[in-house]
Image (cartoon, rainbow, N blue to C red; front, side, top):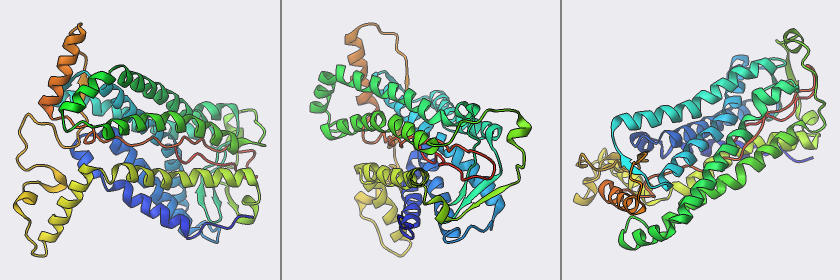
Length: 399
């Protein structure tokens, strides 16, 4: 039997909680709502897993039933919220790839934020509510893992809970494919721009392609595999009635590690889903935490803290505000790291579209790297539940 990855897992979970939040301040400043939602879902999920792995290491005592009620519902939402946030990012990437006129009006930004919030928060909240329809009992506690959601393995569970990560991954796949197609069709235009604008280079162009490619390759396959491994060997039960599903609802399953860890498929499901959260956080930070914009923000934050101890900045350093935002940014200039809002144009001619693209890039000082996008997380699906007092199956923790 494999050994419990303690304290390795809680260390990585806590690092994921911290590192995923590092870029949050300047993304909030830039109205990057989809990226912010992604970071918050991943970071809080890492925090929940960190607490669970520490508190329930080596025991199955029901120390904090209210915490388990809240955390299990949150993990249900996170399994949908992360792919939903990735969908917001690929949707914005697709809008950029269509080379539409940049609009910086507050109304357009507000509309885009509302759409992103409806997708990244509204859908997960809806799934949390629908989960109660197929919630067989209160929750389970797995030794060395912690609080674990319960789902009665019946047909409505697939429509209420299981299908959402895969469905969102499919929609995101379409956006990613359209993004790759749009960039490929306009590659000559981008080559011309990269040769004449220092803010556009091959490295940043490839980073955008990498985002779409990772989403296409990871989201759907991981989501389908997670659903399969979580429900393998568990019979599909008929949904007889509401009272039948919720009979003995207050029951809490206490599962020692010697019981759940000896089931290979169940152990694989548990470890896969909980390790996805810190993996996504660390991969996100590796791709975007060392970019040029991030380094400028780290430098600005360092000088801000150093000034409290009497260290004075140089003139060049002091010209940049906290989080790397210029203290004297022109009114018409785009915010650092902001994702521009795109609106349809009426010009029918290809020549006018190209001119509009070049003017919008020059006028807003648009920088592909400064329009940070987060990476998609691998989908995961929630566990099936065989009966009220049997071993639960794996839960979808991350997208």
